[in-house]
Image 1: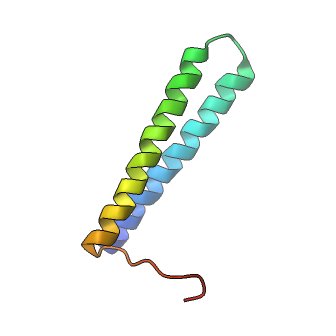
Image 2 (image 1 turned 180 degrees about the vertical axis):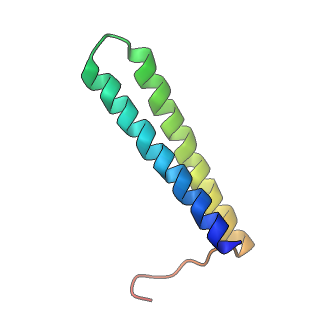
Length: 71
């Protein structure tokens, strides 16, 4: 279960980065279609919150174990 949880969290983070890049592309393109930028950034925020919740639930359930730096 630990590996599957880590893979799901990594996939969500990769999608967050993709949406951030997509918003940057639409902003730099500058075609005046700010609706696409707003939608991409909204998806990024929602997915970031999902990733945070997944990490919290995974730690609470014991699927992943946090550790300190160098520990």
